Amino acid sequence: MPRPGDLVELHYVGTLDDGTTFDTSRGRTARFFVLGAGQLIPAFEQAIYPMQPGETRRIRLSITEAYGESDPALVFVAPRAEAPEDARVGDEVALVGGRPARITALTPDTVTVDGNHPLAGLPLNFEVELLSIPARPAAQGGPP
Image (tube, rainbow, N blue to C red; front, side):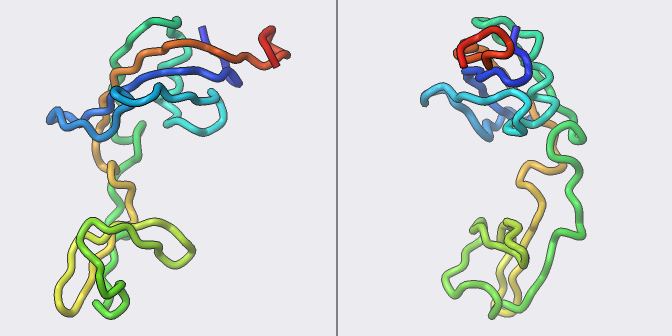
């Protein structure tokens, strides 16, 4: 079973409750992650720890376990002149301080941007397959 600090290789498919796939590694190269390094949603990572290589598991993350509730305070309306001239709905822009946001509406006079994570406010479903644990730190009895 994997432990914190292990490099793990996995495939996953992330879907919404309506069946829409929002991300997948299937059809691409498997993904590698170091457990405990902050690379994964914590609840997703916790579900991997009891898995064995070759095992596939379905995981459901509640809104609070995933990206949290959508925060209306992170939706801003600004003068259209503050957006790039060629801006389109769906474009990613940076807010003051560099925080990413998405343009959600454009009118001749205004631009609306949303600084919430695109999956905020949604429960997430994953099918995850642990392919291997190719590296374990030397202190844990594996290759350095």
